[in-house]
Length: 145
Image: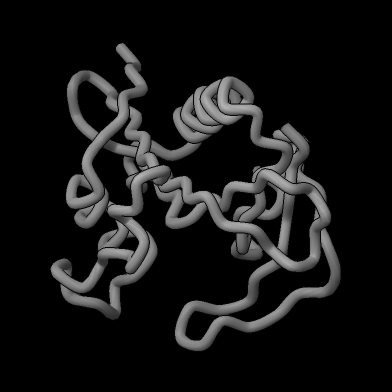
């Protein structure tokens, strides 16, 4: 059974470390704004095991004119749970949450390997690719909510 729930930032650390930031110690997998008041973190549980995460922050990007923006960061699914639709379900839940709070736009720095996934969910690429040191090539992507 799949469940999507709000989770504490520290619950994200193990998946962030395993999937996204293998070069970091688990205690260094926090994001400076994890605890800001309007941030929220969602987790997808498969048979009561946390296997997919996403963190959402009230943060505007200068490329976009929408007044109310959120940023998606550190979206990750454990390898054993990938390609089961969990990340899609988690993001759809986030869209509902953002819509409820009258957010206009969600944006993210998408890794090359995730670009197609985000595109299928209605995200649009903005500009050319760019490098994030140690991590790799990314695209700025956004979705109107």
